[in-house]
Structures are given as structure tokens and as C-alpha cells.
Image 1 (cartoon, rainbow, N blue to C red):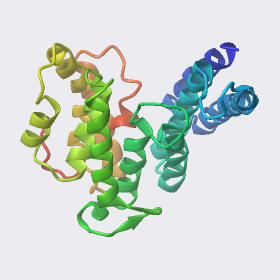
Image 2 (tube, helix red, strand yellow; image 1 turned 120 degrees about the vertical axis):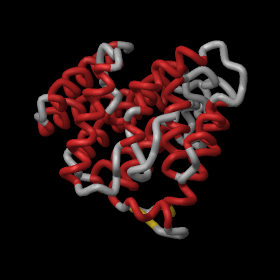
Image 3 (cartoon, rainbow, N blue to C red; image 1 turned 60 degrees about the horizontal axis):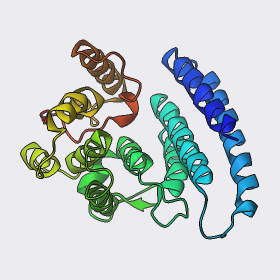
Length: 255
């Protein structure tokens, strides 16, 4: 049964290669295949639960992988500047991460990225109370996301650098000062602090200097330059860089 997860990972790896080659149609095709396989597996697993309210570990792993695949599809569409499609797939992925979902997935990938894509679609909404972007009041949703990520970091994700990266992105989009953001992320003793700072540097914080309010063509050139800069900073690769970026304005400084 575990073969379906390994197959999905292989298809995703091929899809990311296709995406990097700007073969977006090919990337979506491969990710769609992975999605179908995982959805079929989930459909077959649900009737086999010993307790219908408690998915088994393998079912949880399949659901988590499906959430990642849906998020990757959202990222491919965002790379093409197809923001409504991007939002749809990140929202679909979030449905599996949602604390109200039955799978017990503790992650903030789709939670964060569905908001980032909404900011790309309507950057001004972060400053407009009550502004609705693709069905969500963006300002309120950012605050809700901040609370959820803090909750996760108080538990099993305390030393998870991606949780810290997501928290930084949400805080920056909400307009918090970078000093406050840094203090918030590193406010508790953490033996992995230096490692986290190093990895955050190339997974997230370079991208916090991108400018969402620039014209699309300028945004694209900024993202490309930042990706190259992250690689020069010592990263062997940056497969998550483009899908974990976000910024609020042109004067943001790196944490």
C-alpha cells in the first residue's frame, strides 16, 4: 500500500523538474496523476477504518501526501500568475490540514500559501478591513493563520523551521515590524536556533524582500533574482523557495 505514497513522491519530483523547465502543462499532468492515485487510495481506505472517526496512520500519511500534491499544483499555477486557480488548489490542500479535518495533520503549508496567493491577486486587501478575496476576509484570515501557526509551534512544530518561515510570512503580510517578527519567532529557548536561522535564510527570508505591489513582470524578475541569491548563499537547491515566498511592501528588510 505504501507504494502509492512513493509513486506520488516520484511523480511530484518529475513535476517539479517540468515546472522548473517551464513545462507547466506537463507538471500539472504529473501532479494530477498523483492526485488521482492518492484520492483513490483514500476512497478505498475510509470504509476499512476500525473506528470511522479515527483514520489509521497510513490513511493519515496518504492524506498528508495528497495535501502536499494539491499545494504543489497551487504553486505551479501561481508560477504562471494564474492566481484564482492557485488559490483553489491551496484551499483544497488546506481542507486536509484544517484542524477540523479528521486526519490530524499538523502543518501550515497550504494554510499560509492560500493567503499568499490571495495577496498576489489583491495586494491592497491586506490594508483594507473586511476586504474579501476569493471568499476570505483576508485581514482576518491572516490573523487566524497567525494564531494557528503559533499554536502548532507551541507543540510538535517548535523546532520546525518551515513553521517559523510560515509564521514570518504571515506576520510580514499583516504588517508587523521585522524586529517584532524576529522576536516572536525566537522568543523561546531553542537549541536549534542557529540551524533554523541558517535554513530560514534560504527557504523564506530572502523572499520576504520580494515586492508584491510591483507590476507582474517586475515581480517575476525580483523572484528570479532572489532565488539565485539564495542559491549563492550556500543552499544546494531551493525546491521550496518559490512556493514559500511572500512580502508586503518594498521596504521590508530580511529578519
